[in-house]
Amino acid sequence: MTFDWKNFLFRIYLQLAFPPDFTAEKSIQHQQKILKKILRQLSSTQLGKDLKFAEIKSHNDFKNNVPVTQYDFYEAYIEKIKAGQQKVTTDKAVKWFAKTAGTTSGKSKLVPITIQIMKQCHVRGSFFALSKIHQLDKNMRLLSHKNLLIPGGIYETLDSGITVADISGILSVNIPFIYRGYYTPDIHVQTFSKWEEKIANAVKQISKQDVGTMSGVPTWILSVLHKMKAEYPFEKLTDVWQNLQVYFHGGVSFEPYRKQFKELVGKDNFNFFEVYNATEGFFAIQESFESNNLILLTDNHIFYEFIPLEKYNAGEKKAVGLSEVKTGVAYVLLITAPNGLVRYVIGDVLTFQSLDPFTFKITGRTQEYINAFGEDLLLSNVQNALIKTNQTLDCTISDYTVAPLYINIQEKGRMQFAIEFSKAPVNISAYEIFLDENMQNENSNYKQKRANNLALNSPEVIVLPQGTFYKWLSSKNKLGGQNKVPRLVNGRNVMEEILAIISSAQ
Image (cartoon, rainbow, N blue to C red; front, side, top):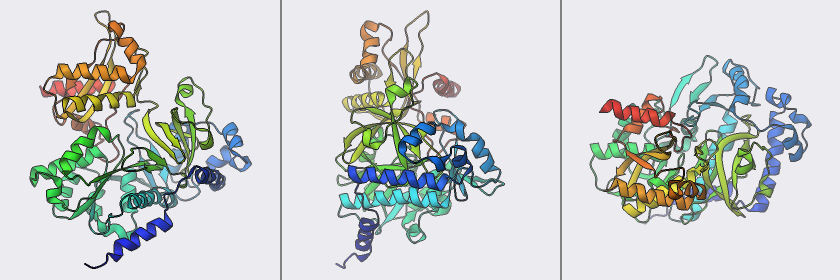
């Protein structure tokens, strides 16, 4: 047996160039340097001049003089970039606009991306992920087989020459050329913006390849694999791809999909590895195979701040730095990045699990919650309740959304779940009972409102026909890429649209 020089040298390169070593001491040092560097980079931009970055000498100056921002703060700047102006929010020329999914607000946002940002943050973060998985699995052979990559699309080029695309699509065209041949399908298919065409062409290519790794959002990877199974029948995925080693996933919580993927793969020594690569930046990678905690990438050209969720919901915007965070506290994440997003609320809620290294779980969204009856229901509450219920009743879920059914004069309110099952429960009434019990165990406020049906009746589960969420996403022009179904909606708009799709099909 010949020595595998290619993978050996790749492993050494990753260890030396991207060591995933993020002790607390190093992380805090990283963050101090990164803030200074970003302020220096952006001080010559219009944004930097407006916010007087040249006068800021410390983190305290930064906190006291720069406001916490959301997307509307940047809309006028973005319009200037779209018109062709440069050095507006970035010190280098903007080549792409990364388009966010916009599932919570319903409105997509455009994030400026330069070549430097792509290389220093997104590509660099990807290499940290590769370095970490090689550290965790000494038998990893990523250069011996193809990597199935299903990114988002590239949509249009504006008159200014700036291309609009999903961040994963931009990342795919920025994969270093020497590694391009390790990916399937080819770059042309990867960047299709029409999802149905992308799936059809991808399946033709990947079914004939020796795939060792998979990368992409779980919902869309499943769509591709299910179509492949329909056209090229197989029992287990490893019957087709005997060398399958790892699935890099992100974009949505993986727990509702884990059981499906395990059954689909059909291999015990298979690794699932999470990355936290958002449109706004590449933030974290999985700590270990045994733990689903994420390690904060503190040396990846992003500066982080945190606002306790309880205070944020009360209107307080006082943030703390990394050295001040505590475990067990839900924090709203703020980022400052070379793309010009400064003290920006990206919408995710984190809870730290350890402080050396800094590891966390994503426990919710600032806008993805339900508080229609004083229950303060978080995404993590619902997700954990669903997972436990599915385990008890041996079910699996393809997708779901939750909304309040409001109190009226005839009846009390309740939570309404619209669920697309890949393996449905035998008895939906039993499912509702277990789900209610698990939600009460997860959230004391919900339990209080449910006590003796005080303010809330038990939840209702609506079983959706297969493909309902696909139709909903298609109606929003949000198929593929980073796009996903909003889990918790503090209103009825999404639920009513889903119910209308069911009604029209009957």
